[in-house]
Length: 89
Image: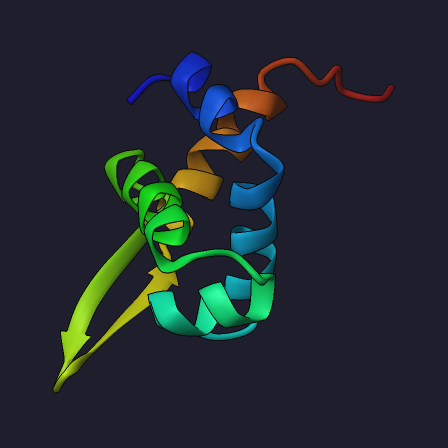
């Protein structure tokens, strides 16, 4: 996925809130739905977009699915952004 597509992924406030919550711990889809006051299908939709973009990964742990951030995407964004920073002299 390219940078342009990642910016589209990050442009949604619900997805940004999910990312913010995941910075501290892994979440289940039902836990996110409860925390954000949204339906499980809505959360699943946003998680699928984040997963396809490589922003999160979801793994089944017993009967539960837990989702976590994939930091490599953020590292790539930092590399992209630093190309445009000028060195201070």
